[in-house]
Length: 123
Image 1 (tube, rainbow, N blue to C red):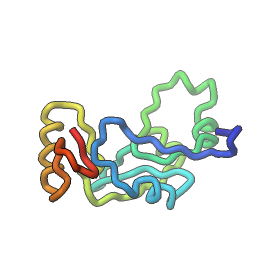
Image 2: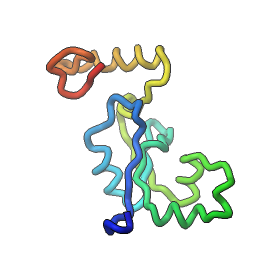
Image 3: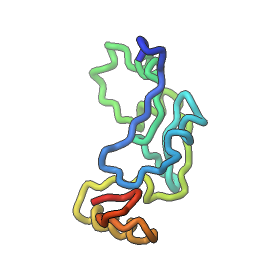
């Protein structure tokens, strides 16, 4: 990133089927450090990070410590960015969560999970 003159990067889990289309712009509005929140719960995998700040917070002598993204975010002063739709930041890790995701997808007309012609959700 340094070679390209950049510092910021966004993280988002691969098992999140409903990522809000405004995720990056909403996080970037609170740059350089921002973490998503839904209904009072931090969602630390949905975040905008500053590589420089993360590297400064984790010098080699501290890399052996256990760091969660939540703890790291608190340590470097992440700003919270609220998202109203809790389902937009859901992860699908279990069969039960997959069923909840399917039900959520079917709630929106024209966004049928797994049907051809879907513009946002897919199976």
